[in-house]
Image (tube, rainbow, N blue to C red; front, top):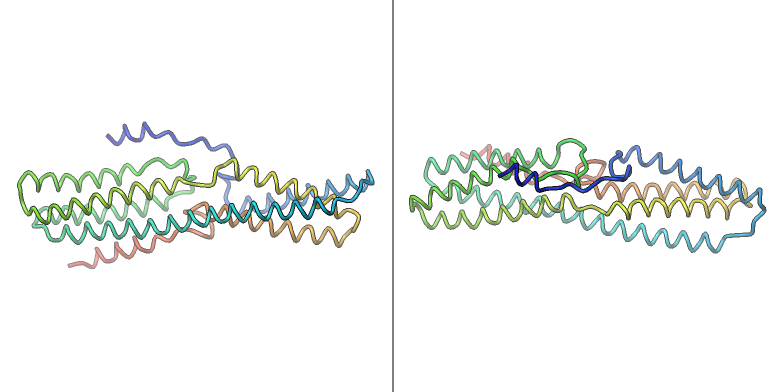
Length: 268
């Protein structure tokens, strides 16, 4: 069944270097590209003795700021959702754990052992390697462990043992399945590649406009343009960093899952 699920999952095609390169590589490359475009535009303006473009530069900078702010808001909201889903799944696992401890052995031991392995699997699934999340396949190992918990419920139902506890366990497992599915789905939700590519392209166009507008003011305008381009680069890096939950400087904390594992290990 896991092979069927994995085979049906077709990961989206990644066609942007901005989606695969590390943040620490994207930043310097983007800044160099922006400065280079600004310098080339300034040189062309000096040679052609073209007219002023101050109004166009001011309007373009405002538009770029608006686009970056909207994109930042989207990335921040998804970061908050991913963080909340970690807490939600940890709470769902804890509910199954507490209700499973009401069972008699060997069902209780099976639930506790399976859940402890499940916590380790989820920590590994959401932290391992630098693969882009939007191409990440479903957690087949986690699904097998959840199926093992449902098999315990089936056995209890067949034996007609502890019906009240079994019903409570069914409710908790349903909540766990829902939390796991929504967390995996949100992990693959990112800012569309087209939006990121167009945002970078627009930044390059703004850099060209700034280089053209500041060509007549010499070194002072060049330094001001560089300072602005540094700000644009840092803003875009922050947006990309927030959009990548497992890599970079801003990552989704797995502390609730780690604390849950510690509680399980310390339980008598």
